[in-house]
Amino acid sequence: MGRWQALLWLGPSLALIAVVVVYPAVALVGASLGRYSITGLYQGWVGTANYLRLLEQEALPDVVLNTIVWVVSIVAVTVVASLGLAQLLNEEFPGRRLVRWALIVPWAASLIMTSKLFVWLYDYYFGMLNRVLTVLGLLPAPVDWLGNDATVMAAMILVGIFVSLPFTTYVLLAGRAAIPREVYEAARVDGASRWRTYRSVTLPLLRPALLVAIVLNVIYVFNSFPIVWTLNDRNPGFAHDTMITYMYKIAFKSSLRDVGLAAALGVVNVLVILLAVLLYLQTVTWREAEA
Amino acid sequence: MSISRERRRTVRRAALAAAGLAVALVVLAPYIVMVCAALKPEAELRITPPRLTPMVWRPTNFLEVLADPGFQVWLRASLIVALASTVIVVLAATPAAYYTARHRFPGRSAFLLLVLVTQMFSPTALVVGLYREFFELGLVDTYAALILTNAAFNLAFAVWILRAFFSAIPREIEEAAAVDGCGRLGTLVRVVLPLSLPAVVTAVIFAFITAWNEYIVALTLMTDPARKPLTVGITAYVTAYVQHWNHLFAASVIAIVPVVILFASIERHLVGGLTAGSVK
Image 1 (cartoon, each protein chain N blue to C red):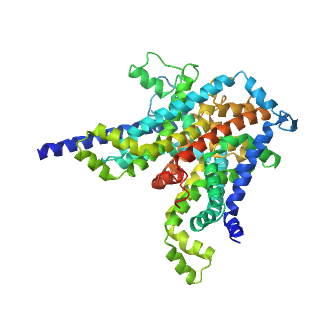
Image 2: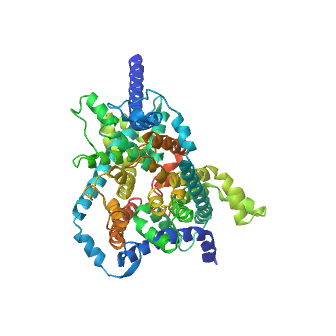
Image 3: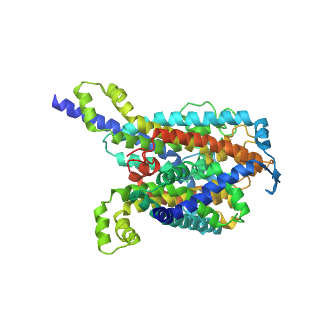
């Protein structure tokens, strides 16, 4: 009885998840084991052939390396910068609300529109970035940020950091707000300096929020698509792709149009995310029991 | 002694305010360039060295974009997809959030875990599987496919936010409603939901914005120009053949401004819904 009733109340959610999350996941695994024509028609079972072919792809080592650089550098810089921002926004000062609202903008704005904006800012001739850097004397001559193999990755990573800062800062601010005031009073009575207090009181107590911010960011940044898709648009080949954009190009854009191969990489991507999800669950110790 | 302490405090506050202003400027700088470029005539986009502000201000760009039939089609598609998926999110998430907040039953943990995992998986990772599914169902180029996808992936946030609010409502209020003859559904609709209005508003705004900004599924499924939403459609303003950056940015400003205002209004509840079960 109780079970049927539960099914009734949870039914709509379960149906939605079954149709749009579980079924596509199954379809993805199925596709990774099949062969498809260039127009997307199923042509038969091939077992693990797609996975073996994936390993043989010339671009794969670079793509994996790009992905690691992309995720690690964005998450690391974002977390460190957000610690500073959260520290600042935790203080009382005139205009604090305005700063918080400003920080909302890159978070709320469509990522594809922000990415297009950065294509314009990075433009060799007409972009403001080259203009500002040359006027300030930081750059002797303009740089073709997105057309140069040496700079394109760094340019994309900068945008990745820019759009990851708001969420991370807000998570750390929430963690910061949960630290009781008394702890700081105790530290002051003990005569601890500001820096000392930060290191031995704030940081340890901020650990849970920090872990959540890191793991969620790893998932978001790994999954990120519009930035690399847009900023790396003009460059041929796969030299600056991540595992996500590489998968997308194999499936839909390059001359390959190879559904089976893309699905095999898709399964690998899903497994990477699952691993991060398990880490997240361990981090938050899945506080189901308390509710 | 106390005067110098007072003074040190004033200096500190001024320094903090200056730092805050610097942060706000750095964060907003790209978008300031966007607004300025949206107000420039086409010819001014091609001068070197580039200038920040327009020499001739041209707000007509915005009117031209609004009058562009293409833009109107994309706007309509975005509104249909975002509104419909938001309605589905609320209809599906509310009973689930209520039941899991009020009842213990076998499978509850499994259900909540399933919801959490869907939240971690953006459609990006599954996009090849999603395309296979909708291709086989003949739903490529339909709003239904986009609406369902957005609804499913925005469900989790709504469940967390609503559940937290529902749990905080004292049972006695509901019991009183039950005594007055309200059934369980009646209690939910007439008593619990009105008391949880902030959570409902937050869930609605979040689901709407996320669907409004969705890109990869729309890019993959919508090939018909008459059904592309804004995120995919406006990229047609700048291609290898045409370079209407001012129109692209005017359209972007129109798409971004309302969303930023809505987002700022739910600012306080965002972290709780996005970090389910961890930050309380």
